[in-house]
Length: 555
Image 1 (cartoon, rainbow, N blue to C red):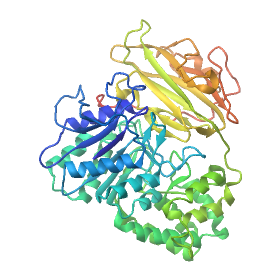
Image 2 (image 1 turned 180 degrees about the vertical axis):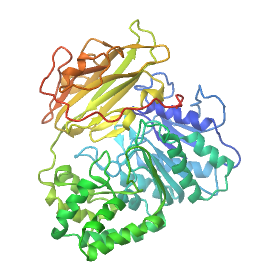
Image 3 (image 1 turned 45 degrees about the vertical axis):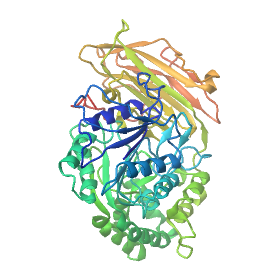
Image 4 (image 1 turned 90 degrees about the vertical axis):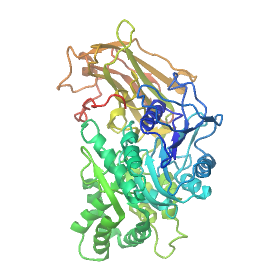
């Protein structure tokens, strides 16, 4: 069962993944069923913006995708009742001995995307203005009445202790990623081929196979750094008991060691997410003998029973399968901590005598004082490109956003950033365009916008780049606007090193610093372009390693 919320800027990626499923197709032993909704805004070529239920059949045609099926109209894919109804329908219509649910979309772990909104977990429906919370995702599965063998999140940042605890009792295994996922997501062709070849494989084997096939796909491509893991849900209660005990064993006397662990253990795009086992390994090595040290040793020893399979590529060393929320004071605030306390793992009614991890985090960060103050976001950035004569250009260009904390993000790095969501990378989607959509609330400061000509196409060695902005604060409407004249980019004078300011990048042929969106106290406007450089913008870090072109361009 694939629940695909593609009514957003991952719309093209959704169609591509169904096309991968079609290369395998259903048979008498394996039924592949999808409920999907797409976006006419981001995929104007798709003629099915309504919600569809599709029984996926083999068509052996990687150049087309069959999105016909039963139309439900346009339903709210971000509503738990919609997910519950899909699971119930799938079981009743295609009964099986085992059930695996894929939750496909943007994801953000347990995290709230806006401070004033409910907790968000995964599945965004832009038309309905919804994004299903982590508690609602678990509620939907519970309300369906179907016990699942596997829940696989094909979404960013979901491999967390808090997420697993929310689903306890609802599934035997969970598969997910500690880090952001590339827009191409799971390789459904190889995963489903393995299942179709061995339909009697155990649920544990399938969960492990998903991890292996994901890693096999991304390992040869050095463009992304990825993680994927599978956990045995039968072990979560035991792990939880040790984490709760650790939360009371850590106190003010251990704060210095915890702070050092926060600075020296594996973290992810959300820097407050740390790999649980690496974090405990660091504490065990650096704490004096005592209860906290012993509990950390026990948590590390449990990894072999909790984590069925865990793999990473690129720069994600020390990713061991499960993250936990452990922010510094500057990475959280009182509102976020209040929302964190609503998770099942943090309910004090569950452990009134011993406390919870959420209570420890709140004490550690002293209520979040000194944390960030959000500003109003709600703007979108879109680049598209053609040849200078207006014809199609297959060159590889990248949209980059330098967010207010100075971190660079782009679609090829992953689909979630601390402040918003990206579209699929253009080399995966096959479209000469990329999008960035912010959350309703974002960090205060400047969002700098860049376009980079990364590689020539087979027939295109120069691209004319158009920048489009959708921002009701700046323009007073909900239309796309092109604030600047298009710019031609190529590799004739490409940047290597030496720029100290952003405006310097515009002296090279392959970079365009278009300007910046400022968000302070809910305001903002687009300002600055190649003719209005801001010399105060400095480059203090090298860019993250850029991608190599993938070996498969049909993803």
